[in-house]
Amino acid sequence: MRKIQNWLGELSLTQQLLAIIMFSFVMFIFLFFVYLRGNIQDFGEDQTYDLIERSQTEMIRIYNENLIQMDGIDNFTSEVSHLFVKEGNFYAFVGTYLNKQPLMELYNSKILPGGVNAESSFELNSQVVYYKVTELPNQMVVVSFMDDDYRNEMVSTLFDNISNMA
Image (cartoon, rainbow, N blue to C red; front, side):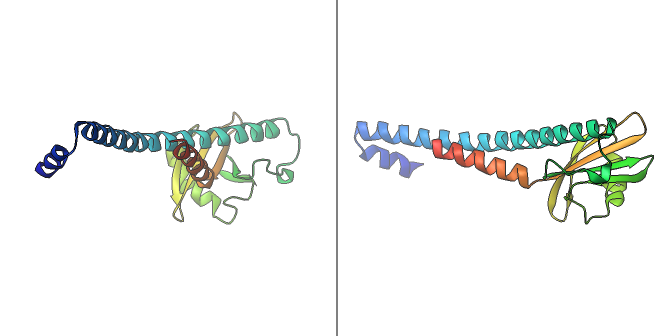
């Protein structure tokens, strides 16, 4: 602290004022970005759950209206996959994400303990998987999955854009 006081004492009054303003500005920017990063990550997670919910709502509408057979559905949101479980047994799967995983094992071990009508996440193969569970009146449970690539890309893009503005 003494070295800083000596250094500031050697500067003219105008230089001291500019140095104080510059240090304050740098500290403000640093704290702003630390705070902002957390808010952007929360926003990205919220948007991920919103995308899952919109996709799941459309899947449930298709299922309820019997528009087409479940096996014939092309997933219109490529990032989201849907697992249909009826009375505790596998019923159908729509999408490509997690299609190589033991779905019922994931459902029983990671999702079912969290309860129905919930949204949460779990880690699988060092990647975060976001999901939303909805129970339908006919003992059908719909689980919609999405990985964290969408959220990570959105957070990165938002933070880069804000960094470029500053």
